[in-house]
Image (cartoon, rainbow, N blue to C red; front, side):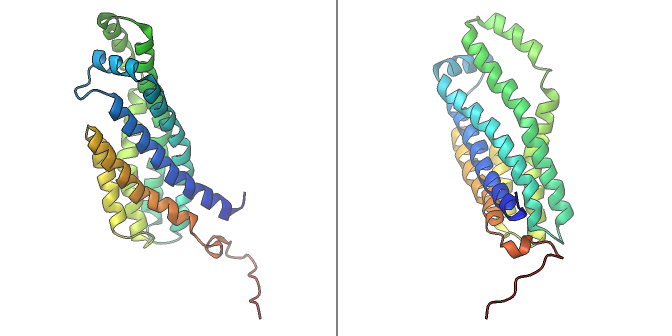
Length: 223
């Protein structure tokens, strides 16, 4: 795959990745009760198994897409802001990879609970044995997805690759993700598309000449 094709693929991955990530999160919020407990969430998942499954699939798909986008985003910063952007892209990629463990552990666990038919006492006992298993994945997921988008877009802003409102909306995206409720999920979806989605579209629009190696021969101008 040529550099230009990969960059456009990475741009599409970043835009679609944040759409899948936020869309899956929004579906999760739709399924979960307003005051989630082990019993109430298990019951809610049992009633809306299809939505819960779709949310989990979207979250898993988003991990692959966001990693590709994080790799390609460095094309936008050949000079100033490259270090900061690189740190943000690395954090985003780590968070996306760790999200697979979090998704399997969270969505898969509640799907298994809902399908088990066990009572609250048995579920509580099982839940106590699984809480510690995904601690590292959750920590990396939170670190990468909360800090990565902000640092990444600030670096891109320093490089002059994005407008000032992109890192501002990245902050909104992160804050909305930490707030419960469907309205916050909608805000997070829109802010994610307007920030990381904008970065992805910018990658897809990078001209081929900007991606060419420095020593590559240039075509003669047409007469």
